[in-house]
Image 1 (cartoon, rainbow, N blue to C red):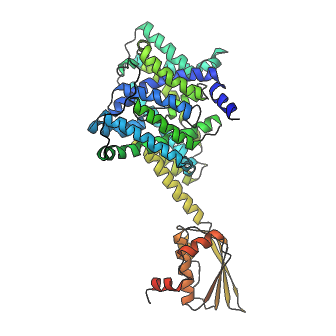
Image 2 (cartoon, one colour; image 1 turned 90 degrees about the vertical axis):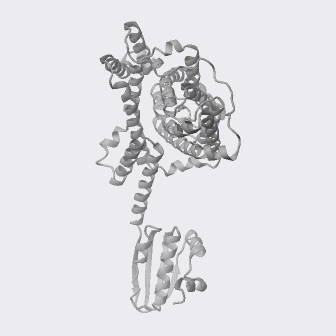
Image 3 (cartoon, one colour; image 1 turned 45 degrees about the horizontal axis):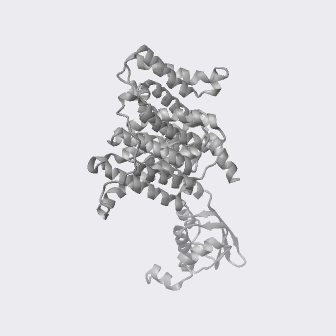
Length: 497
């Protein structure tokens, strides 16, 4: 079984994976250079990182067909560290980031993805699509008409080439777009921005190096806050991307293995002079849309990236940025969940608010972690509010024995505790009160305190109180935190009154 799945991951889609890997490698080059510039480091730091992370994650990642490399979200977090302490401290922070992510994998934090609701995932996807599109705008402002013509032609090729008989199904259209637009630009001698204008490409292979920083507590104090932020954002983006690729390919992935894999890849990147990275939703979608499905496509992307920038950089330098902009616009259009716009009327208001909040915060701050945090917060509040409505208390009176029976149905927790406490009539004169909890569940200390308050109030009014039907979990929490059946605790609560 393991052998079969391994064979399928590596050899199940050789042609598709090879071609998709080449497309991804071409699209990675300008991005890796751009992200290096954002972080304030030499372009080779981003390129070496992208090579190393992609190659390592191909073997140790939990999601076949997903692309990981240097990313903009991570680069933004490094700016201050690089400015104040330099590259060596960035490399040390990258190593620590990897260690923290490996720990997260062993602590099974990948399973926390189950707390991220569908509305947050949709908002995250839409925000990334907008950010990817916005990142292309500098390439389309204050430029000659040739750039617009090239970009439009590139988009035409990307969307129309698949309809060409036979060959349209064999070659990925983004690759055809990049090659044909490069040939046109070179033959016509167009004076437009190329990959070579982005920054100097490295001409040597990366070498193993240990960050030149003192190994002491002071260094740890400098890099730990950055490493912690990088680890969280990296895992968040990687796990969200894994969830999206799961949906696109209708397959499942191991999120905890992905945490460990990202950590190992970042440790590798730090030791080869690269910056920390994570999964890239844009490149992963290029990969899937170009036919990449297995681990081979990720390996080819990383390997081909290094071969191109080191050995055939003269060819790579002439690729017009307009061709790559066309590919990235295709990615942003393909990434955006257009159904979420169409479904705004039919989806519940709480879903729409969670989704839009995630989009707005992510786009406004350019920080994916903030967007997801706000989205999860909204989803949690709406969920708690919704569940609290399903708690109610009914009652019946047995006049012969002067006994009032209250039936509690639903979930009693912090958000429904007040409603629970006000559902009883304390002024009614009865000899006995039975509170039937057979269909109720007490979740937290707030719920226990509310029950204590009810029992103590009834006793104060002279009624005998009996609790029946408590389930085992509720009984455990009541035994631990409840005071109504502990006289010495009641004394403390009443303060001797």
